[in-house]
Length: 254
Image 1 (cartoon, rainbow, N blue to C red):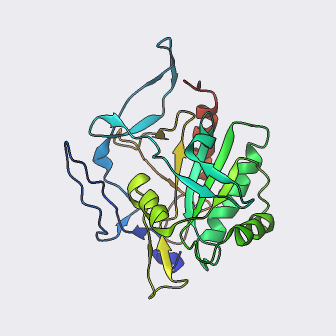
Image 2: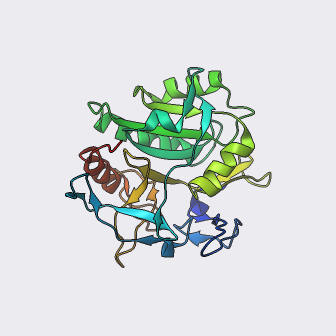
């Protein structure tokens, strides 16, 4: 991230333009602590399998009453392979936006993701989707070296690069996780330090907050070892692990 550590939680919000229903204009608003999208878009919904049996208490992010699904995407990973959203079907995965030369939060985010990777090392249906927001520099070769340096071993962890406009649209509109260029901050780019959690059927999922609304995102910067940061923010890696475990038990409904 291009901003300093103490400013990571003040991230802009990208809203979705909806033709029918509530209209959200994509824009950056005043930094709102811990948020990338309005909390009013999610409602409680039990997850059921094909037989109507409840199998998880995790919530969907809903837009206009419809569970939000990961949009189609196609990029090249660290091995030079073309990866699309279809490659993640049947898998639970965590989404992040980062860049390899990030001088602040990205190293912390990816160390946390490696720890999560190692926790679920036996889960063949778990993965990570990492999208670079600096694709001009982060080529396939650069991403491969970065993956090796951080200890990425999960074959379902794809570090992807491609068209910058497509990546930014995926971040700001597809996942509502802010990403953008900013020449006035360290590294030249700024982005959210949050992770999104996706279920086996491609839906964005999360647990409830204290008010019964979906948390939507998980803080990706603070480690379990740290527990809290200098601003008093509490780590959410533990709850992310718990929720990944829940989703891994759910069925993949073709």
